[in-house]
Structures are given as structure tokens and as C-alpha cells.
Image 1 (cartoon, helix red, strand yellow):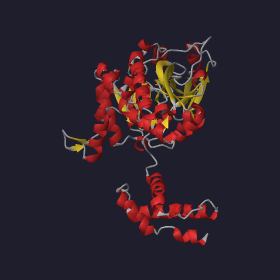
Image 2 (image 1 turned 90 degrees about the vertical axis):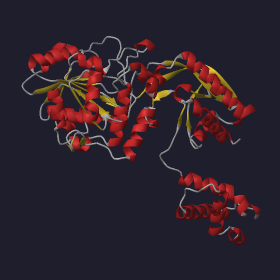
Image 3 (image 1 turned 180 degrees about the vertical axis):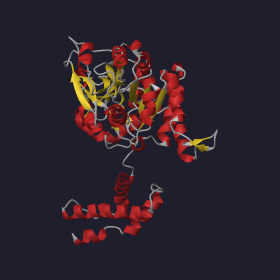
Length: 466
């Protein structure tokens, strides 16, 4: 065994081999040295365990390829690209919405150049970062004023803290929702300093329930859009317009949290009607908040629009400093909103909207194309075909509603259990995330770009060890 230890190459020899291969040019030599030492530690443990029997297996020419794989795996970024073949368009765990080309270019420009982030080019003095998006948000939504914070949870918090701290907020019992990450409306309300006054029943709340709850302590009437679940059957809820009228009669502002709120009407796709931001504003709701990185298709942001008197108060809240968006978010959001000035352009250029609205004919054609690429790369090692399936919008929007699609399936047969194939694909470069249906590994072309097909086939090839 001691002879085997002595046969391990020197660290310098290993480093020279890696440099001669030219496969690690971007990795600093000090980091390379650390990873080579770590690799040799693994080799020593294998020798101790009796896993190494021949001297040839310790030669640099034999160890080299394995060492290179170790170095690449250990030094690649932890946060990296993933291929989304799940068919879930706004996949929270995979980064939610993809940005448009113009939004990506705007982010690059904001990061690589100085900008007028908080500089008024007309006066030459300090300006407001909200000015870059407030006008366009008002133009699109019909609101009097607007502002943006770092996400919609922050938006809910700052609205409640500004308009109702120390006072009561009336909310329907059926709208005390919990979304991902244990974000609960009652908990956020408690943190804001507002007191919850719930009314109605889980399935039915009437206008008189709200009116009966109003007292001298009432500061806000709140409506929470239940975008991530659905109550069906014997149900009743009060519209934003009805609440707005009630609020005006009692001089109490009305706030609606739209959650994944959208600027596009998707009713033509067969989805259950979801209110747009424009519609809610036109109903007379005083303050509306929604996410920027869900159905809107922009960066993570909490967008607040509404009556100027309330938005101005929220802007002046000191908490706003801790919740404000940075220049990258601002650049991406403005570029995304500019596309919405022409709804037809938005449908083509905003990836989230384009994926949601893609036709069944297009998906069927792209499934056949992906299937051909896989067959050419994988040959007879697996069975590849297509079948009918469904996609989901995701991001808490349109729950339990399907979008028809055509799936591409990969059946490894007896060579490999499908669960193990899925697990192996998480370790490929790049990782590939799909789904299993009827013991088949399925890929949905809705969430794959055409230029990603070659990466999909290569990742499956890696997972199969071909």
C-alpha cells in the first residue's frame, strides 16, 4: 500500500498537466492547487480502502480526466443556469420569469455605465429613482401615482404600515392566504403594526360583513386576490368596485393585493378570468400592489399603484429606504414596461407572455423538432416519442388550470430506472429539470428555447453515460 501512495503524481505535475490541457484557463492557480490537493486526498482514501489495485490507475495519464472533472465540478459557480423542461412558465424555484432581450440589455447598460439613477437631468440636482417608472406605470394601469419596492411582500408590508399601523384592517376570512415560504397575510399584518379584523366565512363574504365591521378604529378595507388557490361551489366575494364605493362612503381607503397581478388578458386561452391591474384600478380601488416577476414577466419587484394621496404617503415612509429597488431592477422593469405600451409587442417580446400564449400547433411542431434532435444524439440507447400533456403558468397564478401542450418523452427502458435518470440529470452540465409521467421522463417544449435543444440532448447523453 505504501508503494501506491508514492505513485501518486506531485501536485506541480498535476497542475502542469491541467495547464497543458488548456481546460482550466479561468481558474486561478492557487484555487487549482487547492482542488488538486483535495482530489489527491480522495485518491489516498481510496488507496486506504483497498479500492486501488493497479499501479497504472495512479498514473497521471489515467488520473487526469477524472481529476479534471473534479476540478470543474468543484470550481463552477453555485448559482448557475438550469434547463427548465417542466412546462411551468413562472417556476419560482428556477428563477420565475425570464427577462426580455431589451430588459437584459438595459441591465447590462445600468451595471457597466454610470446613470441618472437619482439625478434630475433637467435641474442638475438630486432626483427620484421612482421617476423612471412612475409615469409609464400610470400610463399602462390608469393609476394616478406609482412606486416600486423590492418584492410584493414588501409592498404589502409598507402599505399596511403606512395606512393602518395601530389601527384595524378589515379582510375577508376567505382571503387570509398563505403563499410560498410561509408568507401569511395575518403575520405580515401583525408585523406592520396593523390589527386584523376578519369578516365573513371561508367561502362566503358579503358587503354587509365589511360594513358591519367598520368602526372608529378602521383604517383600511383590504382585498387579497386568492391567486394561488381556488374555492369553488357555494361561494361569494365582494368586488373591488363594491369595496371602493363602501370605502368612499366612510372615507376609508381600499387596498387590493393582487399577488401575481397581470397586465394581459389571457381569457382567450381558456383560462378562468383573472382581473388585470388596469381593471382593478378602474374599479376605484385606492391602492393596488402586485409582483413584477410573475405574470408581468419582469424582474423581482413589488409594484404599488393607486391614488396619489396614498402613494405619496407610502413614499415618505422611512421603511421605504430598506425596501427600495436597485438600479438593475429599475432598468429591467422600465424596459419590460416599455414593451407593454404596445400589447402586441409585449406578447412577442416578453418571454413569460410568449410562453403562456404559445399555440398548440407551435408546441406540437417544436416537440417533433426536439424529438428529432434527441434521436440523432441518443440513437437507440433510449426510446423517444411525443404525447399530449399540460403545462402550468406557475408563480401562484391560475391555480389548477392547464395549458395544453405536447410533451417529448424519454424512456431509458431496462437500462436505467426513470427516477435515477431524473436524479442524474440534476448533476449534468447544465442541469436539466423535467418531470415524470407514467414512468416516462418528460420534457415540455413550452419552457425550452429552440437553441437549448442541443443542451438538452447533451445533458441526457451525460446522464446515460454515452
